[in-house]
Every structure is written in structure tokens, then in C-alpha cells.
Length: 251
Image (tube, rainbow, N blue to C red; front, top):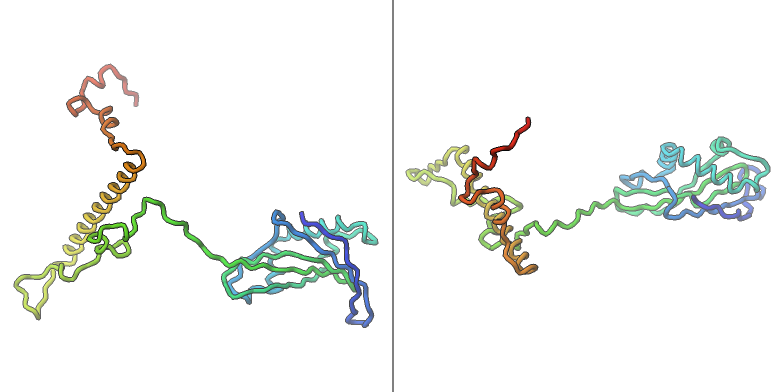
């Protein structure tokens, strides 16, 4: 809940009469735990009083609660009780801040003080700009960088795809230099898929070897899954029919 300081008294000129009218300024303190309102701006042009008004309307419950808290905190200073509806009829707004040049950005709106003078109830807002930047976390250890692969394998992979060598294209042995004849596209495509599958298998084997090396370095012991496999096989490596005798199977 924001806190409202005691008003600061001053005088401001009345634009209609030219007289010096009393002005009461209530400073408002927001903490990080206090709820505020915000919107996303695609450019500096989006930061305006019109956008502020729209944001207040979209968060009318927050606004009404904010005004209600102010009226309760300052009730003893007013000559008569006022309601949120009374304030909404005369409320005006001033928006201040530095937009910067990095967009899109999240714009946080914070009312910093309330000024009451010449029958006006003016809320002064300050906006804070936080550029929207999406940061993708670093990949996990099980990701293989090209720099970690052997040179012979790394040279074959570019952005996750196998590099195509024009010298490996199938050519008709009887073709002349002016008459280049290739295998059918379907056959060539299938051949490339086979080569890609082989490359993926090599990458998987390299990845497994790297994990085993890490295990050796950390625990200094061999990695074997033979114990778990033996639990599900008979001594001769095949299932025995006697293993299932005497058991009921319920469907």
C-alpha cells in the first residue's frame, strides 16, 4: 500500500482570475511490493496521456482503490467527506519521464504526487521504461558445439545440416562434359537422408563417449549396465517358459 505524506502548501496563479490560489501537494511513496500499472509501447509515440487514460480505464479497480486509499489517509484534512466518484469527475493527469530510444519496452506508470488547487485534482505520473529483451539461457552440457567435434566431423556440419559436396553428386559415367545427367531427385534425396542418419549416429556415439569420459574423471569406475540386463534374462540369454508357470493373468 503506498503512503501519502502530509501536504506541502504553496500558491499558484489562477489562469482565469490571475489571483494566487492555494495549492496542496501530496507526495506519494511507492515501494517495490506495491502494485502499479503498466503497458507495452512499440515506440515513443505510444507514451502519451491518451495511452495513460486507456491504461487507467483497463485497470479501473486498481485506480479506484488508489483514490480510496488517498481519501482515507487524508480524510481529516478535507472540509467534508469525498468519494471516489467525486474525484473521478474532476481528476486530471500529468505524465513525466524520459522515453529513450529502445523499443519495444514495458512502461510502468507510477503516481508520484497529487496536487489540489483552483478546484482541480491533478495526479502527476512518472513513467519508467524497461526495454523488452528476451534472453535465452545457456544450453545444457549435453549439447555438442561444433568446436568440440573432431575436425573431420565438424567440417561436415553447418547449422545442424550436412554440407553438400558437389563432387559427390552422382554422374552418369557415359555423359559428356556438355551433357551432365544426374540420378533421379528421389534417389538422391534418399541417399542424402541415409548419409544424414549416419552422421547423426556418429554424433550420438561421440556424445556417449564424452559422457563416459566425464564419468571416469568424476568417479574413476567403469560404467556397465550388465547387472540390470541380467535380471530380465535367463542364464542362456533366452526367456524360459517355466518362468510364467503358476501365474494368473488378469485382463
